[in-house]
Image (cartoon, rainbow, N blue to C red):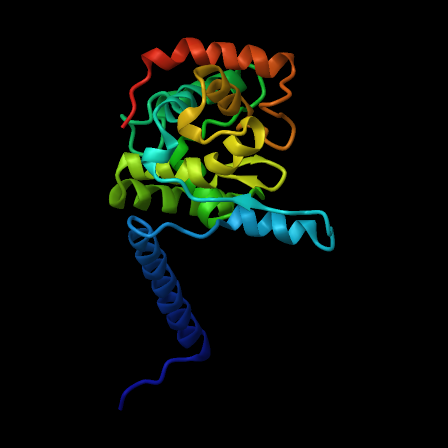
Length: 229
């Protein structure tokens, strides 16, 4: 006679197949987005929910393909955020080791997220910090690197990045701050936009403070040296 499974065994079996199904669907979603441009991101949804009943809150977002993005802004963003972008597989172990070493010497533990990791966070997750989110971020980052080209990852990043309150993507940001499309930005304007990305709700490319101007000057120096996909 076949032995019947107990309630705990059935629950564990159900949980196993549920997790497996969710994992498979997430990989299928990443694969689909290799060709399909998403209408928005989870961070955009998060900000819309956080705005609640704020009648003045509006989101500006428009997708730009690689030709519309040009070459200057992508180069500035790589120079600012992830200079080993074309050479790593989603995780910059060099920067991660440096961040850990600085923290062990008494400094603040700084972020060492790559562009690939930022895409995973912005597109599929939220800005809320937790070990679970970091684990899911690593999961999506690995599959992006496996299924997408570096050019697609960078295109996605530039199109969903938060560039100010309610401003998402390079097209909306370039028009909002400088009244021109991304491909028409000057190197200085592109550097200013890249300099605001770590804190887009606190800094403005059109009205930069002393730190943002200093950061943009450093980015301008780095831009000729970086490799782009």
